[in-house]
Image 1 (cartoon, rainbow, N blue to C red):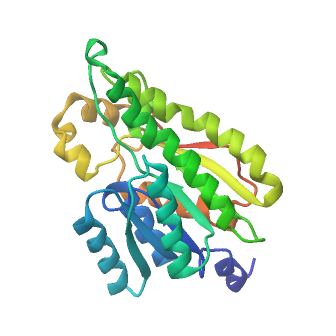
Image 2: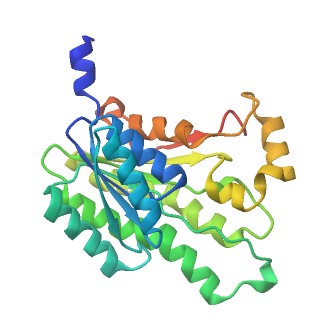
Length: 256
């Protein structure tokens, strides 16, 4: 394939929304998409300063981005997110459902609120964000990526609710791929392994047995970095992955 044709398959000139993009994996995905020429809507729930830093860093490198506040656990705010995108950039080609909330709690401490909160973020959010996204994608179709949070890697103690709510994203991904395929909209999911993010560092995981265990099991000999995930997300968002839909891709450094 000629280099010129190859470049045309990248996200150049496309518009993407990345939820939960004020830091960590979401920020890296947004930054990498912008570096490939996409205009990016950096969504955040509470960290305006973080989102502004991400947008500013993109602008410094010549990227196009705006920050839009919306808590994707609430349908009215999801609607506002897409309305703002339509108002500013007028179209949508890619959606990355990355927002997540991870809380570990022993089974006897689980309450209704503890169940509803992650389910609203991990399921209600992607369901209704996808609903809006398909309405805004044009005749050329689009790409939707559901990020399965790291807590769903396995049955970690205290992570039952987070594991269940994020694990359901795989079923949602397959169903949406079947429904939207005829409309040229591809839907897929990613399962990152342990990745060094601000949240992971703040939780003390970098000095924990989990980090040692993950590193020892990884053929690559290390845990992931946000850019490891972001570069794969850019591929899945672009038309280079045009025959991939309904799949969940493990990006875990070879850990099984």
